[in-house]
Image (tube, rainbow, N blue to C red; front, side):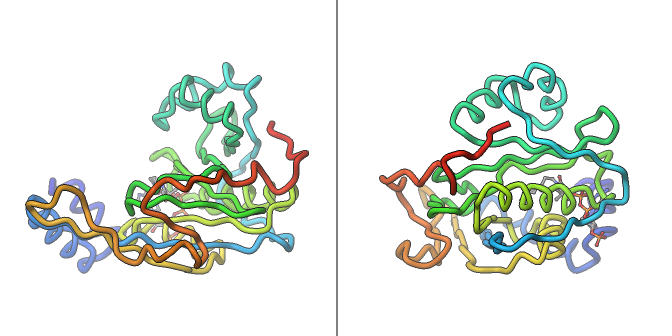
Length: 236
Ligand SMILES: CC(C)(COP(=O)(O)OP(=O)(O)OC[C@H]1O[C@@H](n2cnc3c(N)ncnc32)[C@H](O)[C@@H]1OP(=O)(O)O)[C@@H](O)C(=O)NCCC(=O)NCCS
């Protein structure tokens, strides 16, 4: 681990975090164990805003707005083709602006979603949505932008008739777990993936049979979920 990164981990995760990461890195060529945690929040009731430590403007970005936002999405690793495809499929982009700059971005969807970190498919039920590819630009981290933006996204979902948000996080993503806890999201399930030298693909443990919430599957679920809680969900 390079020194700069090690100091960063030490600062944000302490000596224990640094030790665990160094051990994982050493074992990485032969053994990889990941833990992915699922959380959810009840959206049936209105949730209070979570203030950030910087003034923010929140909004959704529609297909028509996209050309104006293409440059802002690039630092998040989202090209205009990807963004167009996601919007065409009915996903919603939610941004937090500091002045004219997009500091935070997250995507919302009701589609069955591949959870790469856990090697499983997440299928959402009626009135459920999930967020993916959420990120705050490095220069803006630590201002409480993520919890504030994620809460605004929850409020937007509530206003559009959704009743639950489901989310997953790698357990070692300390920043994201903190953000999630700050939002009062409750932990639901944990999936472990284990890969050892010689295995073709990682083994996922704790996937279950799709009966428990959130419904997880090893193969793509055949039935598409509903496109939204209400047919009149505005997409912009
Ligand atoms: C996870 C993430 C969205 C949090 O965004 P944020 O707006 O910085 O969130 P917060 O300001 O509430 O900070 C959360 C925690 O991150 C840590 N943190 C703050 N500033 C940081 C920085 N500059 N660098 C690293 N960690 C930092 C702190 O531990 C903080 O908790 P604390 O306030 O109790 O000390 C952001 O770190 C990020 O974009 N990470 C990369 C992408 C990612 O992991 N996305 C989530 C996928 S599930």
